[in-house]
Amino acid sequence: MRLRVSEAEDYYSLFNPMTKNEYSYYSIDDVLDKTRTKYNSESTLAVITLELDYKYDFIERRVYIFIDMLGRVGGLMGALIPLGAVFSSILSNKIFTMILLSQFYQVKKADGPEETLPK
Image (cartoon, rainbow, N blue to C red):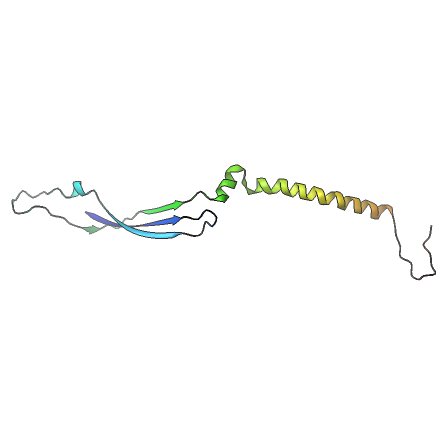
């Protein structure tokens, strides 16, 4: 029988995808197929040979996290673009009004108290 040393990684956190538990475990071939004896002598009940297998299994388990849910709904950009559009429309209206006011009305500051602004 071949003895196989395998590894597994378990990403268990819903909000932090970087936290994980690492495991190593042992597995063997099918016992019933490998333990049938080829010897016909009455003194030999069974011959079991264990060999270390050079192949191994790597298993990774990931939890469906919040970022995956955002990707299914339309992605993070799908949520940020409408929010950014609303925010920029609020600011752009005020900025546009301020630019128009500064272009229409030219205000100069007087140098002294006796000078007046031209009419």
